Length: 183
Picture 1 (cartoon, rainbow, N blue to C red):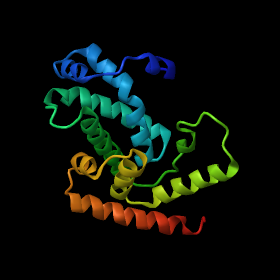
Picture 2: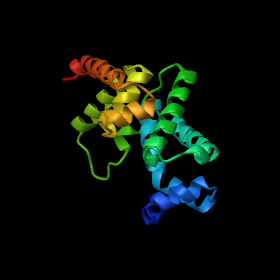
Picture 3: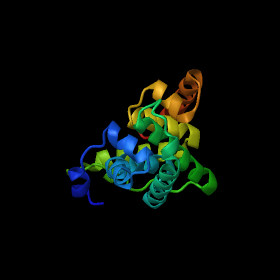
Picture 4: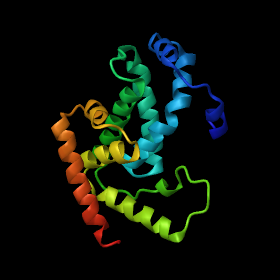
């Protein structure tokens, strides 16, 4: 779907989610139109390259279609979708093992010219993210890039609050170490 078509797609509300859970394909397509940019953004930052992120998006929507009937609404639909996305991305990273370059992150959401310094900073952050373990990368992406609360991250990753805090703390330390030489 094009960016224009995504902007024209009506926002999916709770009734759309309910209809999709009941098997309504049109409602599910509306959810896909609304949430694909979010799914791609999270997948890209976790898996590290656009090609794998696109594969991950397909895996996410296939898994979501197969399991949406089990979604009970105990958490927001977006929280459930973050969990499906994070799990699919982490599974892809674990299967793949060798680190691939994070391409395309500096292009996501940029509509204006960017300075060379800003591009260098983005590249340094991408390399630092790539150096993290996949578990650390997941908490950093969900907290710092997606701005989710600790509670939401705990729910998405099925972790205790202390585990989220610990992983996030270690990930921030590692990012600072990796970025030390850049500054």
